[in-house]
Structure formats: structure tokens, C-alpha cells
Image (cartoon, rainbow, N blue to C red; front, side, top):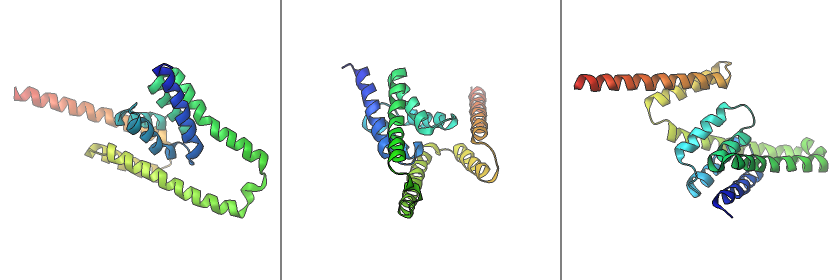
Length: 192
């Protein structure tokens, strides 16, 4: 089996396993994906993972599928994207079919309500952990910190779509880098 085929099979296997055990969707999967593809296999760098997360957050659709497609494509091209996307979709699809056909009254059970109450709390903890880890890697400059705080305040207090927040943050980043580059050129030019 060639390295390319091995990567495709590994992508399918890893995404299938992640999807089968990671309750809470794409954001809950982030720590596991980082461990598998950045820390363990070194198929992506930290910057690749952060870029993938940024792109994934700005795309419409299901977060876990978006993440699988983006990581799969970066690791093994179109075949990798297809393998990862199908693997991440298969466990929930099978689980929904089994649950729907086997137990109709499950959702109205007080016992299941209490169980899901605990599961939801655990998912919040996983998402918070992902946010903290990302913040430690991304918020290393004053500019990034200002954008993050401003974005948080805007998203909490104003009824603005997250897409517009991402567009405005992207423009702010572009302007900031352009102005910084011009200032650096002017400083270098005046020093010579």
C-alpha cells in the first residue's frame, strides 16, 4: 500500500473513530483532531491547524464535515477529503437510524433527560478547553487580543451574523498588516 493510500485509510479510520466517540460535534472534536494530526502524526503544523479552524468557522454547513474536508484535503487531496467527510458522517448517520428505529420513547424519558444534562455540561467543558488552547496560540499580540475582545463583545451584545464579524476581522487584519509594513518601510528608509 502506498503512502498516499495509507494516509487516506488512516484519515477514514481516525475520523470515523473521532466521530463515533466525540459527542458535541466539530468543536468538541478539535482537541482530538489536533492530537491526532498535529501532535501524533505531524501531518499538520499548529499554524496549519489554526488556519484550517479559521476557514472552517467561516464556511456554512456542519462544522465536523467542514473540518474533515479541510484536513482531509490538506493531508491527501480530494480523495482524503472524501474519505474524511464520509467517515465523519457515517457514525452519526448509523446512530440516528439505530436510535430512531429501536427506541421511540427515549427522548421523553426522565432518566435520559438527566443523562443528557450531564453530557451537555461535559461538551461545554470540551468547547471551553478548545477555546482556551486556541487563545493561547493566537492571542500573542495586542492587535489579536483587541480583535478577539471586540469580536466577543459585538457577538454577545449585538445581533450580528458571525460571517460579518469574520469579514470585518479579516479586513482589520489586512489593514493592520499593511500599515505595519508601510511604517517599517518608512522607518528603514529614513534610517538609511
